[in-house]
Image 1 (tube, rainbow, N blue to C red):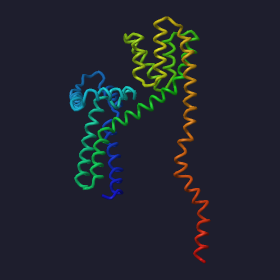
Image 2 (spheres, rainbow, N blue to C red; image 1 turned 90 degrees about the horizontal axis):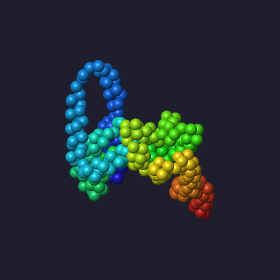
Image 3 (cartoon, rainbow, N blue to C red; image 1 turned 120 degrees about the vertical axis):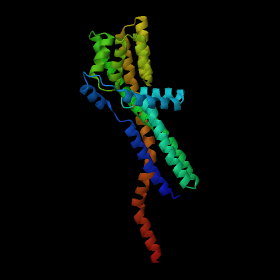
Amino acid sequence: MNPTVLFSLLLVSMPIGYLAWSILSVDRKARLATAAILNRGRMVPEAAEKKTSALLAGVGYRLTPPAYVRKLDRLLSLAGRPLSMPLEKVLAGKIALGLAGAAFGLYLAAVGSTPIMKLAGLFLLVLGYFIPDLLLYSKGTERQKAMQLELANTLDQMLISVEAGLGFEGAMARAGENGKGPLAEELVRTLQDMQVGRSRRESYQALAERTSIPELRSFVQAVVQADTYGIAISRVLRIQAKVMRVKRRQRAEEKAMKLPVMILFPLLFFIFPVLFIAILGPAVINTVVTFSSQ
Protein backbone atom coordinates (compact mmCIF):
# COMPACT_ATOMS: atom_id res chain seq x y z
CA MET A 1 0.00 0.00 0.00
CA ASN A 2 1.06 3.57 -0.62
CA PRO A 3 2.92 4.99 2.41
CA THR A 4 0.84 8.17 2.12
CA VAL A 5 -2.35 6.16 2.57
CA LEU A 6 -0.83 4.32 5.53
CA PHE A 7 0.21 7.57 7.17
CA SER A 8 -3.29 8.98 6.59
CA LEU A 9 -4.84 5.94 8.28
CA LEU A 10 -2.58 6.39 11.28
CA LEU A 11 -3.49 10.07 11.51
CA VAL A 12 -7.16 9.10 11.51
CA SER A 13 -6.91 6.21 13.99
CA MET A 14 -4.95 8.06 16.66
CA PRO A 15 -7.48 10.92 17.12
CA ILE A 16 -10.30 8.35 17.15
CA GLY A 17 -8.59 6.44 19.96
CA TYR A 18 -7.99 9.62 21.91
CA LEU A 19 -11.63 10.66 21.44
CA ALA A 20 -12.81 7.28 22.70
CA TRP A 21 -10.63 7.60 25.79
CA SER A 22 -11.88 11.15 26.39
CA ILE A 23 -15.47 9.91 26.30
CA LEU A 24 -14.66 7.10 28.73
CA SER A 25 -12.81 9.41 31.12
CA VAL A 26 -15.40 12.20 31.22
CA ASP A 27 -15.62 13.89 34.57
CA ARG A 28 -18.98 13.19 36.24
CA LYS A 29 -18.18 15.01 39.46
CA ALA A 30 -20.43 17.97 38.66
CA ARG A 31 -23.30 15.70 37.63
CA LEU A 32 -23.03 13.62 40.80
CA ALA A 33 -22.85 16.74 42.96
CA THR A 34 -25.95 18.20 41.26
CA ALA A 35 -27.84 14.94 41.70
CA ALA A 36 -26.87 14.82 45.38
CA ILE A 37 -28.16 18.35 45.93
CA LEU A 38 -31.43 17.70 44.09
CA ASN A 39 -32.01 14.44 45.94
CA ARG A 40 -31.08 15.77 49.35
CA GLY A 41 -33.54 14.56 51.92
CA ARG A 42 -34.77 11.72 49.74
CA MET A 43 -33.74 8.08 49.65
CA VAL A 44 -33.00 7.55 45.95
CA PRO A 45 -31.76 4.10 44.99
CA GLU A 46 -28.59 4.05 42.89
CA ALA A 47 -28.46 0.31 42.41
CA ALA A 48 -28.33 0.51 38.58
CA GLU A 49 -25.32 2.82 38.50
CA LYS A 50 -23.49 0.82 41.16
CA LYS A 51 -24.26 -2.39 39.32
CA THR A 52 -22.85 -1.00 36.05
CA SER A 53 -19.69 0.24 37.77
CA ALA A 54 -19.23 -3.09 39.54
CA LEU A 55 -19.71 -4.97 36.27
CA LEU A 56 -17.07 -2.88 34.45
CA ALA A 57 -14.71 -3.19 37.39
CA GLY A 58 -15.17 -6.95 37.51
CA VAL A 59 -14.48 -7.36 33.79
CA GLY A 60 -11.41 -5.16 34.01
CA TYR A 61 -9.98 -6.98 37.00
CA ARG A 62 -10.59 -10.40 35.45
CA LEU A 63 -8.90 -9.57 32.15
CA THR A 64 -5.90 -7.72 33.65
CA PRO A 65 -3.04 -9.45 35.51
CA PRO A 66 -2.72 -8.48 39.21
CA ALA A 67 0.85 -7.21 38.77
CA TYR A 68 -0.28 -4.94 35.96
CA VAL A 69 -3.19 -3.69 38.07
CA ARG A 70 -0.71 -2.72 40.78
CA LYS A 71 1.39 -0.90 38.19
CA LEU A 72 -1.66 1.06 37.00
CA ASP A 73 -2.53 1.89 40.60
CA ARG A 74 1.01 3.23 41.04
CA LEU A 75 0.63 5.40 37.93
CA LEU A 76 -2.66 6.72 39.28
CA SER A 77 -1.00 7.51 42.60
CA LEU A 78 1.76 9.48 40.87
CA ALA A 79 -0.87 11.29 38.78
CA GLY A 80 -2.73 12.37 41.92
CA ARG A 81 -5.66 9.95 41.50
CA PRO A 82 -7.89 12.19 39.33
CA LEU A 83 -11.59 11.91 40.11
CA SER A 84 -12.36 11.44 36.42
CA MET A 85 -10.03 8.42 36.12
CA PRO A 86 -10.55 5.85 38.85
CA LEU A 87 -8.81 2.50 38.53
CA GLU A 88 -11.98 0.68 37.44
CA LYS A 89 -12.61 3.14 34.62
CA VAL A 90 -8.98 2.92 33.49
CA LEU A 91 -9.19 -0.87 33.30
CA ALA A 92 -12.48 -0.75 31.40
CA GLY A 93 -11.11 1.92 29.06
CA LYS A 94 -8.01 -0.16 28.31
CA ILE A 95 -10.18 -3.12 27.34
CA ALA A 96 -12.48 -1.01 25.15
CA LEU A 97 -9.63 0.81 23.42
CA GLY A 98 -7.72 -2.45 23.00
CA LEU A 99 -10.71 -4.08 21.30
CA ALA A 100 -11.18 -1.04 19.05
CA GLY A 101 -7.49 -1.04 18.12
CA ALA A 102 -7.59 -4.80 17.51
CA ALA A 103 -10.62 -4.51 15.23
CA PHE A 104 -9.09 -1.70 13.20
CA GLY A 105 -5.72 -3.46 13.12
CA LEU A 106 -7.26 -6.70 11.88
CA TYR A 107 -9.09 -4.74 9.21
CA LEU A 108 -5.84 -3.17 8.03
CA ALA A 109 -4.07 -6.53 8.09
CA ALA A 110 -6.89 -8.10 6.06
CA VAL A 111 -7.07 -5.30 3.50
CA GLY A 112 -3.33 -4.81 3.03
CA SER A 113 -1.10 -7.52 1.66
CA THR A 114 2.25 -5.91 2.46
CA PRO A 115 4.18 -6.54 5.70
CA ILE A 116 3.97 -2.84 6.49
CA MET A 117 0.19 -3.04 6.74
CA LYS A 118 0.38 -6.03 9.08
CA LEU A 119 2.85 -4.18 11.27
CA ALA A 120 0.52 -1.17 11.24
CA GLY A 121 -2.33 -3.39 12.44
CA LEU A 122 -0.22 -4.73 15.28
CA PHE A 123 0.86 -1.20 16.15
CA LEU A 124 -2.77 -0.05 16.37
CA LEU A 125 -3.60 -2.96 18.68
CA VAL A 126 -0.75 -2.06 21.06
CA LEU A 127 -1.46 1.65 20.80
CA GLY A 128 -5.16 1.27 21.63
CA TYR A 129 -4.46 -0.82 24.71
CA PHE A 130 -1.69 1.41 26.09
CA ILE A 131 -3.24 4.84 25.46
CA PRO A 132 -4.46 5.10 29.11
CA ASP A 133 -0.98 4.17 30.35
CA LEU A 134 0.59 6.91 28.24
CA LEU A 135 -1.91 9.49 29.47
CA LEU A 136 -1.39 8.53 33.12
CA TYR A 137 2.39 8.50 32.72
CA SER A 138 2.35 11.94 31.09
CA LYS A 139 0.08 13.39 33.78
CA GLY A 140 2.16 11.83 36.55
CA THR A 141 5.42 13.14 35.09
CA GLU A 142 4.05 16.68 34.83
CA ARG A 143 2.73 16.48 38.38
CA GLN A 144 6.04 15.25 39.80
CA LYS A 145 7.95 18.00 37.98
CA ALA A 146 5.59 20.61 39.40
CA MET A 147 6.11 19.23 42.91
CA GLN A 148 9.88 19.24 42.43
CA LEU A 149 9.82 22.92 41.44
CA GLU A 150 7.61 23.85 44.42
CA LEU A 151 9.57 21.92 47.03
CA ALA A 152 12.26 24.52 47.82
CA ASN A 153 9.79 27.40 48.20
CA THR A 154 7.45 25.26 50.31
CA LEU A 155 10.26 24.30 52.68
CA ASP A 156 11.25 27.96 53.01
CA GLN A 157 7.67 28.83 53.91
CA MET A 158 7.50 25.99 56.46
CA LEU A 159 10.83 27.11 57.96
CA ILE A 160 9.53 30.66 58.41
CA SER A 161 6.37 29.33 60.07
CA VAL A 162 8.32 27.06 62.44
CA GLU A 163 10.73 29.85 63.43
CA ALA A 164 7.71 32.09 64.05
CA GLY A 165 6.44 29.66 66.70
CA LEU A 166 4.22 27.17 64.86
CA GLY A 167 4.65 23.43 65.18
CA PHE A 168 5.64 21.26 62.24
CA GLU A 169 2.05 20.15 61.55
CA GLY A 170 0.90 23.77 61.80
CA ALA A 171 3.58 24.80 59.31
CA MET A 172 2.45 22.01 56.98
CA ALA A 173 -1.15 23.20 57.29
CA ARG A 174 -0.14 26.79 56.56
CA ALA A 175 1.89 25.72 53.50
CA GLY A 176 -0.99 23.55 52.29
CA GLU A 177 -3.54 26.33 52.69
CA ASN A 178 -1.41 28.99 50.99
CA GLY A 179 -0.12 26.73 48.22
CA LYS A 180 -2.02 25.93 45.02
CA GLY A 181 0.02 23.17 43.40
CA PRO A 182 0.15 19.39 43.80
CA LEU A 183 2.67 19.59 46.64
CA ALA A 184 0.20 21.60 48.72
CA GLU A 185 -2.45 18.97 48.01
CA GLU A 186 -0.12 16.22 49.19
CA LEU A 187 0.64 18.11 52.41
CA VAL A 188 -3.06 18.55 53.10
CA ARG A 189 -3.64 14.85 52.45
CA THR A 190 -0.84 13.96 54.87
CA LEU A 191 -2.47 16.07 57.57
CA GLN A 192 -5.81 14.41 56.85
CA ASP A 193 -4.18 11.00 57.32
CA MET A 194 -3.03 12.12 60.76
CA GLN A 195 -6.48 13.42 61.63
CA VAL A 196 -8.14 10.08 60.90
CA GLY A 197 -5.83 8.28 63.32
CA ARG A 198 -2.77 7.39 61.29
CA SER A 199 0.57 7.84 63.01
CA ARG A 200 2.88 10.61 61.91
CA ARG A 201 5.55 8.18 60.78
CA GLU A 202 3.09 6.26 58.59
CA SER A 203 1.65 9.48 57.17
CA TYR A 204 5.09 10.78 56.23
CA GLN A 205 6.07 7.46 54.64
CA ALA A 206 2.81 7.42 52.70
CA LEU A 207 3.68 10.89 51.40
CA ALA A 208 7.04 9.58 50.17
CA GLU A 209 5.39 6.56 48.52
CA ARG A 210 2.95 8.76 46.59
CA THR A 211 5.82 10.56 44.87
CA SER A 212 8.88 9.66 42.83
CA ILE A 213 10.99 12.71 43.73
CA PRO A 214 14.31 11.79 45.43
CA GLU A 215 14.52 15.18 47.17
CA LEU A 216 11.08 14.79 48.75
CA ARG A 217 11.89 11.25 49.85
CA SER A 218 15.11 12.41 51.52
CA PHE A 219 13.19 15.21 53.24
CA VAL A 220 10.61 12.74 54.57
CA GLN A 221 13.38 10.48 55.87
CA ALA A 222 15.02 13.44 57.60
CA VAL A 223 11.71 14.43 59.22
CA VAL A 224 11.07 10.86 60.39
CA GLN A 225 14.55 10.64 61.92
CA ALA A 226 14.14 14.02 63.58
CA ASP A 227 10.81 12.92 65.04
CA THR A 228 12.37 9.64 66.25
CA TYR A 229 15.51 11.06 67.86
CA GLY A 230 14.10 14.38 69.05
CA ILE A 231 16.12 16.65 66.74
CA ALA A 232 14.92 20.24 66.40
CA ILE A 233 12.68 20.40 63.33
CA SER A 234 13.74 23.98 62.54
CA ARG A 235 17.33 22.83 62.05
CA VAL A 236 16.20 20.01 59.77
CA LEU A 237 14.04 22.38 57.72
CA ARG A 238 16.87 24.91 57.41
CA ILE A 239 19.32 22.29 56.13
CA GLN A 240 16.79 20.67 53.81
CA ALA A 241 15.68 24.01 52.35
CA LYS A 242 19.30 24.94 51.64
CA VAL A 243 19.93 21.58 49.97
CA MET A 244 16.77 21.91 47.85
CA ARG A 245 17.80 25.37 46.63
CA VAL A 246 21.26 24.07 45.68
CA LYS A 247 19.78 21.11 43.82
CA ARG A 248 17.31 23.35 42.00
CA ARG A 249 20.15 25.58 40.84
CA GLN A 250 22.14 22.53 39.76
CA ARG A 251 19.20 21.25 37.71
CA ALA A 252 18.88 24.63 36.02
CA GLU A 253 22.61 24.65 35.21
CA GLU A 254 22.38 21.10 33.89
CA LYS A 255 19.55 22.05 31.55
CA ALA A 256 21.50 25.10 30.39
CA MET A 257 24.51 22.90 29.61
CA LYS A 258 22.33 20.47 27.61
CA LEU A 259 20.75 23.24 25.56
CA PRO A 260 23.57 23.61 22.96
CA VAL A 261 23.50 19.86 22.29
CA MET A 262 19.72 19.93 21.85
CA ILE A 263 19.96 22.86 19.43
CA LEU A 264 22.72 21.23 17.38
CA PHE A 265 20.56 18.81 15.38
CA PRO A 266 17.84 21.32 14.38
CA LEU A 267 20.64 23.72 13.47
CA LEU A 268 22.35 21.19 11.20
CA PHE A 269 19.26 19.78 9.51
CA PHE A 270 16.96 22.81 9.22
CA ILE A 271 18.86 26.10 9.55
CA PHE A 272 22.21 25.47 7.85
CA PRO A 273 20.70 24.06 4.61
CA VAL A 274 18.51 27.16 4.25
CA LEU A 275 21.48 29.43 4.85
CA PHE A 276 23.57 27.55 2.29
CA ILE A 277 20.78 27.82 -0.27
CA ALA A 278 20.35 31.54 0.38
CA ILE A 279 24.09 32.28 0.27
CA LEU A 280 25.36 29.88 -2.38
CA GLY A 281 22.21 29.69 -4.50
CA PRO A 282 22.80 32.88 -6.57
CA ALA A 283 26.47 32.01 -7.12
CA VAL A 284 25.57 28.51 -8.33
CA ILE A 285 22.91 29.91 -10.66
CA ASN A 286 25.34 32.48 -12.12
CA THR A 287 27.97 29.78 -12.62
CA VAL A 288 25.52 27.51 -14.42
CA VAL A 289 24.32 30.38 -16.64
CA THR A 290 27.91 31.41 -17.45
CA PHE A 291 29.07 27.91 -18.45
CA SER A 292 25.89 27.17 -20.39
CA SER A 293 26.28 30.35 -22.49
CA GLN A 294 29.83 29.48 -23.58
